[in-house]
Image 1 (cartoon, rainbow, N blue to C red):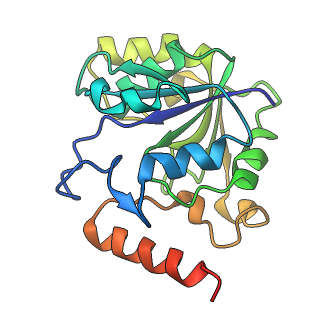
Image 2 (tube, rainbow, N blue to C red):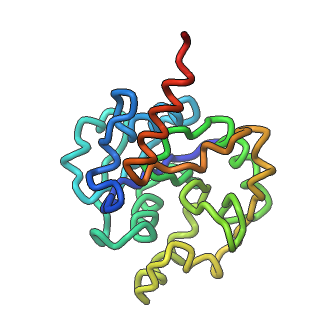
Image 3 (cartoon, helix red, strand yellow):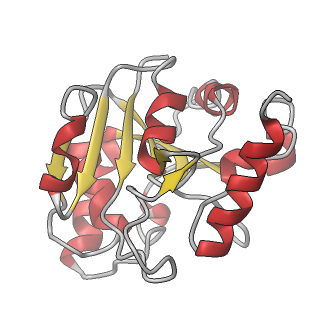
Length: 202
């Protein structure tokens, strides 16, 4: 399927203590791990950031857009990404998901048929709304959430048709479900380094 990949890179990175998007994993910024994982599937990228100048080096690979409104959280950033999408469907992900698997994304993409507006791993209790597909037609519902200042990421879900995908149903594409893992802390980054090191040929 054709889709735009929307990368959210405007978080405050408080738990990491420094910018996550440009933190190095095996010598490569986390945001590049995400770009590299998705480039076999799409050439349409939108990177949403507060500090757009920090990402100018990626303009050849992604359209860099400013969060609108700035520093308003992932719901507003998702709206910005969808508004700037070239395609009717977007795969939204954060910039700190270095083990995103192309097969996992493809599997989710096959589940967008059937009149759904969003395809999200998990359920209402345990969910991954930033490893999910959203149709561009979600923008009006996102607009209304911003207008009423209801900035919780899933606040617009009651207004759209959401397909929940049990995470165990995605293990065929990603047995360890590493696509759902984010690097939020220095400890997470150290764990990611260990995983990369263990995977290297000896």
